[in-house]
Length: 300
Image (cartoon, rainbow, N blue to C red):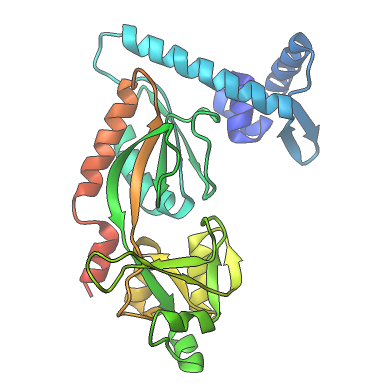
């Protein structure tokens, strides 16, 4: 368990605090484990610890075994209270702004249930990295995952008033190609923007744009746009506050970027643990009402 805690926290000191042990005890337990396995699991330096390739592989396998033990215990227990640990991966901005509060209200009802919440905009390998559940925004391509829809995420073409004054606003979708744009590095393909067709039944309209700035985080894209560095397409849940305050404006109100879908996804297991089913049901109920970021816009 000491090794798993260090991997999850990225620090021997933090793992020791979480376990209520001294740093030296945690360090010795890992050294003893390495001696038994006859492999180095962690690279140690004055800046911290970094897992070796074998350390990562061992961690992933150990997480899988711990999940199976949690599942077995859950199946044997006759009480209704949820227990064990939930490992959830989600995008950074959605996780901090909207998912976190919903999850934490759920956790407050189950004191015997633990939570590991990893917020990262990269595409996480849920089964390979030992996660019970993930939040995905966009199109799903992994057929090994089961998905449950939580909400529709509208997107909007944004720029700052200063950029609009300096460069002018695009009159059409095609005109975007001549503008300085801000791209999203995690998109695939990264520099193609898609818009809904103006005519019912037609395919979406795709446009290749020239990105002066590319970043892997939506808040950074928003901030670059606020600074007047270009035009970007943002989820409304990231852009809403800036649109309401006037820091951003809708740069092309006659065009509608293809909306994303927010999903809860989980590995395709024969048995879905009760705790995973319960948290998914909680998320579905929480987001089936009017979405908070849409409320922000409609209130203006």
